[in-house]
Image (tube, rainbow, N blue to C red; front, side):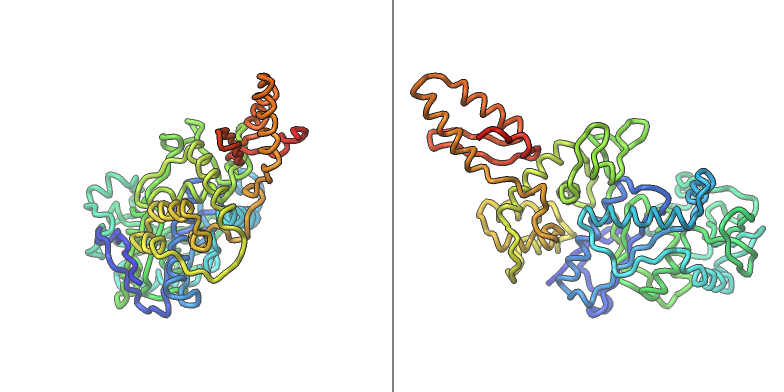
Length: 458
């Protein structure tokens, strides 16, 4: 089984060859837990969840390790604590659980390891000490900074020159920096901020060192895949590479880099000022008078676009996705069997995680009513994890179809179609799709189906 992935570092689609097929390792940058995750945050979670499932299918569940971190020490968290009067730990415990609940709701499996940055402060201090000893970092006014000029390959991931990076990075020009691009590994903490004792005084880590230290501790100096949104390519991932390769020059850090594109809402960049900024929980529970969207529907919409292309969340796409899933759930059923996966679906996912092509193949399975293959394919894509959800079950509309057919027969004789029109209107109002032809009456529950509105129609 050959998997091909587009490696951001080489800008080429490459055959994936793990360092050790019995120990395939993947690291994905996780959230800074200070508030609810917005819907853009869910895209890398869903994308890399599918990759995780594919790797487990190909190499075996016991031979894949997936790590996704939580950043629980950050100035945004500090500010939230100061505003609310709550402790930092209370805030991060709550927001971490929110994140896990919301990501599980969109069908994402928990990674094998979910480290919190505050659990690895010792490892970060040790890595920083090594960088200083090797001449790649220096101390200045209570800070420790990485010397970008000490790493000759800096900028290769993003393909930017130093001048471009300075212009686009909003770098902090501090008097203690030797180079404007040098970035913070450790910074001092005042008494009102979280801090840990270190050789450089009481302080806290910079953002970038977290992932380098945690990935080293959990996956080693070399591992297979590093993923995240393309907004992290620079400076975060660029800085991770620099400090990791300098701290452990005998390793290669990550061999394959994968980055997903960003998300828009109704054709526009998501922004609070435009009123199109939604959290995952907003979509799940409903917002601004809009009904809630099932997590499986959110997942389907996201996977309908290739991860390397910008995706647009729209209410219309959500309705179409819900209708498709309702049909597929009814076709697939809940039976658990050992049906082999439909190879064209696996092939699509193996070709740079082409989820859009995989969904197209699943449409073909639905048309052919291939129940076992459809069910197995849905499961690989992260659907049908806990049976058919209540929203997708619908109701048996056969009695309603029989009643409408009966009314139509009577109307053909009396020439009075008022009862037919009234029932058809009521069915449509309940979200039922009505098809009437010479062959008979067909009813299907549409994406906005509401069974409660059928009461009293029979």
